[in-house]
Picture (cartoon, rainbow, N blue to C red):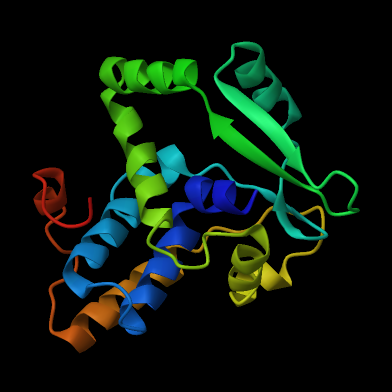
Length: 188
Protein backbone atom coordinates (compact mmCIF):
# COMPACT_ATOMS: atom_id res chain seq x y z
CA UNK A 1 0.00 0.00 0.00
CA UNK A 2 2.82 2.42 0.73
CA UNK A 3 4.34 1.99 -2.73
CA UNK A 4 0.87 2.19 -4.26
CA UNK A 5 0.27 5.48 -2.43
CA UNK A 6 3.33 7.13 -4.00
CA UNK A 7 2.40 5.73 -7.41
CA UNK A 8 -1.18 6.99 -7.24
CA UNK A 9 -0.44 10.33 -5.55
CA UNK A 10 2.27 12.03 -7.64
CA UNK A 11 2.10 15.13 -5.46
CA UNK A 12 3.32 13.22 -2.39
CA UNK A 13 6.00 11.44 -4.42
CA UNK A 14 7.16 14.80 -5.81
CA UNK A 15 7.34 16.10 -2.22
CA UNK A 16 9.62 13.19 -1.28
CA UNK A 17 11.84 13.76 -4.30
CA UNK A 18 12.26 17.41 -3.32
CA UNK A 19 13.41 16.21 0.10
CA UNK A 20 15.94 13.96 -1.64
CA UNK A 21 17.32 16.98 -3.52
CA UNK A 22 17.46 19.10 -0.33
CA UNK A 23 19.35 16.33 1.46
CA UNK A 24 21.70 16.03 -1.54
CA UNK A 25 20.83 12.38 -2.08
CA UNK A 26 19.59 13.04 -5.65
CA UNK A 27 20.90 15.43 -8.32
CA UNK A 28 18.89 18.64 -8.56
CA UNK A 29 18.41 19.05 -12.33
CA UNK A 30 17.13 15.59 -13.30
CA UNK A 31 15.08 15.24 -10.12
CA UNK A 32 13.41 18.63 -10.57
CA UNK A 33 12.51 17.60 -14.13
CA UNK A 34 10.87 14.47 -12.71
CA UNK A 35 8.97 16.58 -10.19
CA UNK A 36 7.81 18.98 -12.91
CA UNK A 37 6.51 16.05 -14.93
CA UNK A 38 4.59 14.76 -11.92
CA UNK A 39 2.92 17.98 -10.86
CA UNK A 40 2.83 20.00 -14.07
CA UNK A 41 0.18 20.10 -16.76
CA UNK A 42 -2.53 17.47 -16.64
CA UNK A 43 -0.57 14.76 -14.81
CA UNK A 44 -2.08 15.29 -11.35
CA UNK A 45 -5.68 15.31 -12.56
CA UNK A 46 -5.22 12.38 -14.91
CA UNK A 47 -3.03 10.20 -12.70
CA UNK A 48 -3.92 11.06 -9.11
CA UNK A 49 -6.13 8.38 -7.64
CA UNK A 50 -6.63 9.31 -3.96
CA UNK A 51 -6.39 6.80 -1.16
CA UNK A 52 -8.13 6.63 2.19
CA UNK A 53 -6.15 6.67 5.40
CA UNK A 54 -6.74 3.94 7.95
CA UNK A 55 -4.89 2.84 11.08
CA UNK A 56 -1.51 2.35 9.44
CA UNK A 57 -1.66 4.97 6.70
CA UNK A 58 -2.85 4.88 3.10
CA UNK A 59 -4.89 1.78 2.43
CA UNK A 60 -7.21 0.18 -0.06
CA UNK A 61 -8.23 -3.44 -0.15
CA UNK A 62 -6.12 -4.99 -2.93
CA UNK A 63 -7.96 -8.32 -3.02
CA UNK A 64 -10.01 -7.89 -6.21
CA UNK A 65 -7.21 -6.43 -8.36
CA UNK A 66 -4.67 -8.95 -7.08
CA UNK A 67 -7.10 -11.85 -7.52
CA UNK A 68 -7.59 -10.88 -11.16
CA UNK A 69 -3.83 -10.67 -11.76
CA UNK A 70 -3.21 -13.97 -9.94
CA UNK A 71 -6.01 -15.77 -11.81
CA UNK A 72 -4.40 -14.78 -15.12
CA UNK A 73 -1.00 -15.95 -13.81
CA UNK A 74 0.44 -12.44 -14.03
CA UNK A 75 1.56 -12.37 -10.39
CA UNK A 76 2.26 -14.75 -7.54
CA UNK A 77 1.63 -13.81 -3.92
CA UNK A 78 3.62 -15.51 -1.18
CA UNK A 79 3.14 -15.07 2.54
CA UNK A 80 6.39 -14.94 4.46
CA UNK A 81 6.57 -16.15 8.07
CA UNK A 82 2.91 -17.16 8.28
CA UNK A 83 3.24 -18.14 11.92
CA UNK A 84 3.86 -14.50 12.86
CA UNK A 85 1.05 -12.07 13.63
CA UNK A 86 2.57 -9.62 11.14
CA UNK A 87 3.33 -12.00 8.30
CA UNK A 88 4.18 -10.09 5.18
CA UNK A 89 3.20 -10.79 1.63
CA UNK A 90 5.69 -10.74 -1.21
CA UNK A 91 4.42 -10.13 -4.73
CA UNK A 92 6.20 -11.50 -7.79
CA UNK A 93 5.65 -10.46 -11.39
CA UNK A 94 5.51 -13.63 -13.48
CA UNK A 95 6.55 -13.93 -17.15
CA UNK A 96 2.92 -13.64 -18.35
CA UNK A 97 2.57 -10.47 -16.27
CA UNK A 98 5.74 -9.02 -17.80
CA UNK A 99 4.44 -9.85 -21.27
CA UNK A 100 1.12 -8.14 -20.49
CA UNK A 101 2.88 -5.05 -19.09
CA UNK A 102 5.11 -4.84 -22.18
CA UNK A 103 2.09 -5.19 -24.48
CA UNK A 104 0.20 -2.47 -22.59
CA UNK A 105 3.13 -0.09 -22.96
CA UNK A 106 3.28 -0.79 -26.71
CA UNK A 107 -0.49 -0.43 -27.18
CA UNK A 108 -1.02 2.52 -24.83
CA UNK A 109 1.96 4.91 -24.85
CA UNK A 110 0.53 6.86 -21.89
CA UNK A 111 1.36 3.85 -19.68
CA UNK A 112 5.00 5.00 -19.62
CA UNK A 113 3.90 7.59 -17.02
CA UNK A 114 3.39 4.73 -14.53
CA UNK A 115 6.72 3.16 -15.39
CA UNK A 116 8.42 6.50 -14.69
CA UNK A 117 6.52 6.85 -11.42
CA UNK A 118 7.72 3.41 -10.31
CA UNK A 119 11.29 4.28 -11.28
CA UNK A 120 11.04 7.55 -9.32
CA UNK A 121 9.83 5.67 -6.23
CA UNK A 122 13.02 3.63 -6.50
CA UNK A 123 15.03 6.82 -5.93
CA UNK A 124 13.76 7.05 -2.36
CA UNK A 125 15.92 4.98 0.00
CA UNK A 126 13.01 4.20 2.35
CA UNK A 127 11.10 2.51 -0.49
CA UNK A 128 12.42 -0.89 0.60
CA UNK A 129 10.00 -1.75 3.42
CA UNK A 130 6.45 -0.75 4.26
CA UNK A 131 7.43 0.35 7.77
CA UNK A 132 10.12 2.74 6.54
CA UNK A 133 7.85 4.17 3.86
CA UNK A 134 5.02 4.60 6.36
CA UNK A 135 7.33 6.47 8.74
CA UNK A 136 8.44 8.80 5.95
CA UNK A 137 4.88 9.39 4.73
CA UNK A 138 3.76 10.33 8.25
CA UNK A 139 6.42 13.05 8.35
CA UNK A 140 4.20 15.18 6.11
CA UNK A 141 1.74 17.15 8.24
CA UNK A 142 -1.16 16.94 5.76
CA UNK A 143 -0.82 13.15 5.65
CA UNK A 144 -0.45 12.80 9.41
CA UNK A 145 -3.45 15.06 10.14
CA UNK A 146 -5.98 13.04 8.12
CA UNK A 147 -8.48 11.17 10.27
CA UNK A 148 -8.97 7.44 9.73
CA UNK A 149 -11.49 6.74 6.98
CA UNK A 150 -10.91 10.06 5.20
CA UNK A 151 -9.22 10.73 1.86
CA UNK A 152 -5.60 11.89 1.94
CA UNK A 153 -5.62 15.42 0.46
CA UNK A 154 -3.98 16.74 -2.68
CA UNK A 155 -0.82 18.77 -1.96
CA UNK A 156 0.08 19.74 -5.53
CA UNK A 157 -0.08 23.49 -4.83
CA UNK A 158 2.22 23.16 -1.80
CA UNK A 159 4.69 21.01 -3.75
CA UNK A 160 4.70 23.42 -6.68
CA UNK A 161 5.59 26.32 -4.37
CA UNK A 162 8.28 24.24 -2.69
CA UNK A 163 9.75 23.26 -6.07
CA UNK A 164 9.80 26.91 -7.18
CA UNK A 165 11.57 27.97 -3.97
CA UNK A 166 14.10 25.14 -4.14
CA UNK A 167 14.84 25.88 -7.80
CA UNK A 168 15.40 29.56 -6.99
CA UNK A 169 17.74 28.68 -4.08
CA UNK A 170 19.76 26.43 -6.40
CA UNK A 171 19.81 29.00 -9.21
CA UNK A 172 17.73 26.78 -11.52
CA UNK A 173 14.75 27.66 -13.70
CA UNK A 174 11.25 26.52 -12.71
CA UNK A 175 9.64 24.80 -14.40
CA UNK A 176 12.59 22.99 -15.93
CA UNK A 177 12.49 21.62 -19.46
CA UNK A 178 10.84 18.21 -18.99
CA UNK A 179 11.55 17.25 -22.63
CA UNK A 180 15.17 16.51 -21.71
CA UNK A 181 14.08 13.44 -19.72
CA UNK A 182 11.76 12.34 -22.51
CA UNK A 183 14.75 12.45 -24.87
CA UNK A 184 16.74 10.14 -22.63
CA UNK A 185 18.39 12.55 -20.22
CA UNK A 186 18.00 12.49 -16.46
CA UNK A 187 17.03 9.47 -14.38
CA UNK A 188 16.68 6.14 -16.14
